[in-house]
Length: 363
Image 1: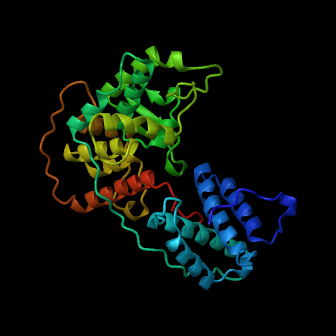
Image 2: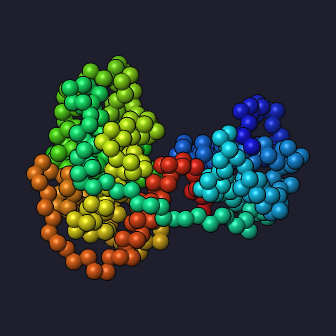
């Protein structure tokens, strides 16, 4: 069920067709400022359904029924990739969530009389995955791999130090601009956060030192005219994508002899876990990670960047150039909140290893 590569011109598409509905739905998402990645993911999943339905002579949303959607769900279950492996449960859910979002939108737009996907039950997914957390010695081993005599090695050391210190996502690191790092305050302005949310996060003195060295000795040699002001540049002078950052980071992890899964996210998970072990209050770690889980918004309170910076410096083992020693802290009563954090981090790891989208817009 591959998504069709060819789309007829707009004036040749039946306005009442499924194909037209997909285009209008994606336009609706764009107008409401959903990220291009989200829109592309939904469009890909929905076009796959349009192709499947077309093979069965179903071309309009009004012709789609719940039994038909359940048959499509079974087709996803039995679908095989080119290598013969089945779709992961998360991939199946991604397709079905896109369908539920489309038909919910069509019902709200009064384009269909009822929503046939409202009663569609999604496959059960495991929220927790095996934890992948580096030890401090493993982190230092990875950081020691880049060749600091080369421009690329110096840049890569600065990238990994930034990922480890700030616990930001790969997409967020790729979106950093030249002026998003505030050396005086020791903070980073994350503008390309998940869900279009911006936030300020602390960055340690050691990471700042490597970023400064990169900006002085490496970036000027990587930049090309016109300079788009991205903080981290590829060998061609362009900004990184999240995928390319992961492709860059993973070989350093392998070279250090670390076999744990992940790339950029591995440092995010590690930083959060080590801060908790160092005594950080969980609500500060939540703020650092930029989580906005609706189920926990009544539990956690917002913290200021000044407080967050102080806690980061006190608990993050890579926040300074001196050897880190954390006092023992009574963490009684944090088990439930720590379970929430594990769920968040491991879900993000699943998203990095399997990029199918499962967010539902319009809810």
